[in-house]
Length: 352
Length: 179
Image (tube, rainbow over all chains, first blue to last red; front, top):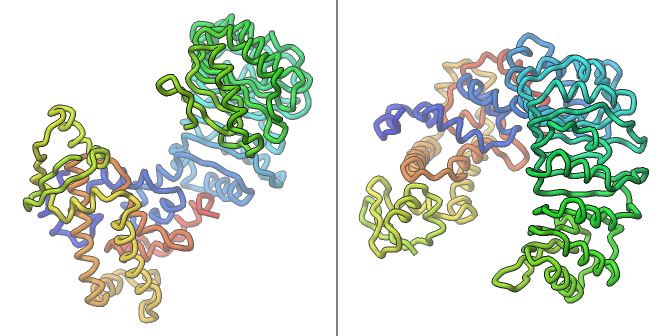
């Protein structure tokens, strides 16, 4: 439909002369609760806005889950479930009734066009059936909190979904046993325990970015890094390592990265918020020695700038460290430290 | 700075990064290169260009939003206007035309302006939040989302639902309401 002034004057209502494509474009900027109100204004708006409301379903309270289960089990449920592409239950703490715990996987089975699935409250949800039987042909992102009793179902579930390109796994304080081989030929981003990375088969060879968690009991620092290098060395660009508690061998992890993966472009090495003390001269020199081994490292992040609590605000001390490290690794152009991002511009390091 | 000439022959000196929000002008500048020549915009009037090139936090937003809010509050506070849900469709239509002349005139004028703005955004290929503004101004309220009947009044939308259907949709989407 072409927009003309004549068409506009023929209708009193602004929505009568706007083509559906433009209305849809405008709606794509609205928030979900705004779209929900639009759905109730007229049939036209309902038809355009409903697919957008259901496209991404994020649930973080018990009433939300109850209402969604109610909707999906009524007459319009099947057609609405076809719109769902992303589904996530967040890790907010809330109580779930036994009846709801049973209902959630049943609802999940209906989302056959799912592209992203995030189940971060699996302590409360019975996912055994879903992990054993469910198949989502278009699944590209899977984020899951591992449970000891269902961990063995994870490799078959993942192997059934070779479309996954983004995988995130975490687990509670109990260690997870060694898993069977995981084959994900399209995986580009992995975030999870280093021990599970060791289960990736040789065809999981497209990983570009890996965020590895070290738990207090994980003593094998070299294993996951060597394994990643073996299966994905040509694609791997960045590694981020996080210790779940203040791991005593934190610096050793960086040293091993330098030794095993010297071609990395990005290294994120976030220290824990609240325990990240000022980096001592001794540690700074050790980091500098590590940096010498990297051949093309451009970005080094030692903190998450967005979550930093503002300790260690001595800029001159930080500047000394930045200069020390940049002399050790000439390819560096960005360093995050103590909540600040330093960048190299015209041969000078500045805070950006 | 870039010199723009509108359909009513007014000239505008505008920051380059602002005019480059328009894909049309951005491509034009890339093709022509650095030049002092004015860029003619035969489909855009000066009043519309002012609105289109205002930064999103500038007076236009406050202006447009402020005027919508004032219309809405007139609608809400007037006790002589019961909620549309309680009326038949014929009465609804009558009520819509019954809205005070000033309101009616205001809505008409503003919708024409909105049309011009959208037309200009379409012509200039600006995928900014400009379009969002009018719909959001309509759907957002200071204390959360506006009720649907207010949005219908603002944009002259005819309610083609039965009360039962509307209640059913509300129930269906309850999980997604802001809380």
